[in-house]
Image 1: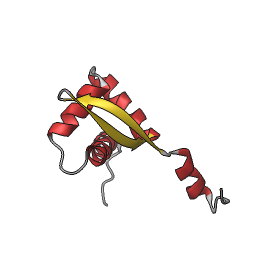
Image 2: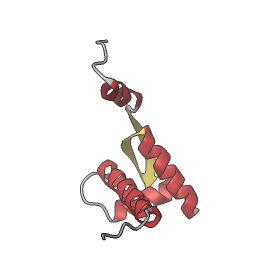
Image 3: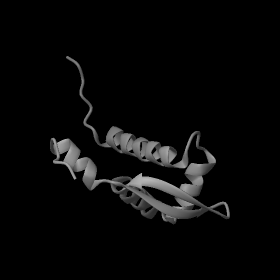
Length: 93
């Protein structure tokens, strides 16, 4: 293996893509995501009181493109929603 060129590259190695098999609509499929996305999906599913498979099924029903990409975008949207509700309002003078 080569030497890491910088902190960003080292971090990318820490978050290698993990492929997992899940059942969606009665069929097995593989989803490839970095661990932070898997952790975020598990957290969102727990907050909603649903299984990870149920959450991925919901994402699958409304997706365009790959399920992996749709899952990442779903996590991003939930993060944006949280930030919008926790950010202090800054008013211009």
